[in-house]
Image 1 (cartoon, rainbow, N blue to C red):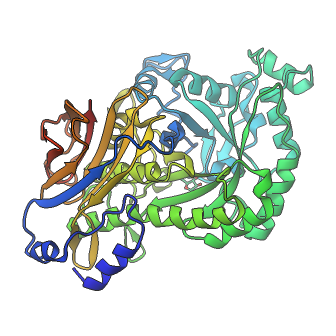
Image 2 (cartoon, helix red, strand yellow; image 1 turned 180 degrees about the vertical axis):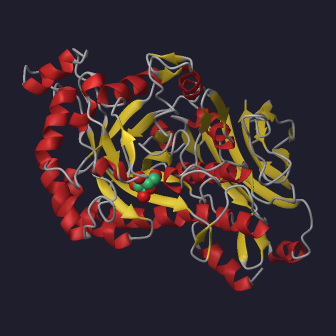
Image 3 (spheres, rainbow, N blue to C red; image 1 turned 90 degrees about the horizontal axis):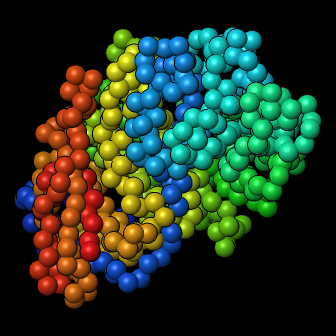
Length: 527
Ligand code: AHR
């Protein structure tokens, strides 16, 4: 470990990023002693920002079997379904308390004509999905189906309107169809389609990736376009719809600066897209076949989300010092080479313990920035990229990522507690990351929760947490780990990576001692 790197890190924020401890201790770590010695200090009586449940949101787009086959099978299917929606998938998602779901894209949003997906299904046109493999979309899953699906899983709808290839009038009519209380032709069409009451749409994304598939726009032009479309947003009834401005691609800080400067007063949130993509030169890498160098490279890239949020937030602070505008990370997750034998345009990939670690690290980062990050959407919900669920005909399997989201459920609406973490690094070659990353919250149920990730795949961690005297009496917990970095759940072996009861934490006076195994995510509950 280089001393210069240590000093640099000591001068940076101590939030979430682990602070290296005494140099003497670090020198002895050069010998890769196991387990890592980690200390933490928790302030359980100083609750801070609320963790907006919407940071646990998901995303569903017309890609491969992300919707058709994965969510929608049609009422006549042999696959058990509720009015066309897969019963198994709906049940699994309900169990997660999904706060919101984004649709119809993604890139697809800026090609989508919502009028193709309303009215009697038999009369809907077949359109070409030129974004994702040129497949046919019979539009059986349209606005009504999406909103019904969101309702079935108990999630709020987050809809992205087409800015790239449709004029504002297309959006105006869609909003009228969805939300108008009037007797206009579009509102009457909604009623004819079976929905008397206007739908509640709490979030509206104006376009997607306007810097790329949404229109190859410059930030200046995109900001003007955003202002133009925003001017025509008309929502029926008394509902408040949050407006999400099209945001930056990863570290394009200039984009955020221009969009905020020109349009801050017209937005409630600005989006950010960032994917964790380990590469070998220009080549994408396997989702399941990787070594420790790729493991740490992936986790280090996932941790870059922290830097991104800090830098985009600092820019936002210039124009919005009270943090009225949210930074909404409405696309994030791993992106690997597609499953061998599958259509690469379908973005289908397996999901391993490594994905679970990426999910845990990323969610902890969002929690640590709860004052600014108030919505996020993992890409994607079913069968696409870092999916929560994989299906194949009538089979379904829950991924390691699904279980991380499940373990984080008590964080929804909780308050962030100050937790200082002093961890040594885990290093491979020139890449170093903190061995242990953690956050703590005071849950709405009154319990305190600590979410801990041990990134090191070969060494456990002995963690000593300092607490006020008598603060807690009982500890319980769950752990997600597996024998290998690439352990995964398959249709034939669905329980390889699944949460289990964790018994490795004990209280003695003012200290809680936690022994974490290697490559593990633990959620502790303190009473
Ligand atoms: O999630 C897949 C694609 O990634 C989305 O359609 C697009 O917005 C992003 O580039």
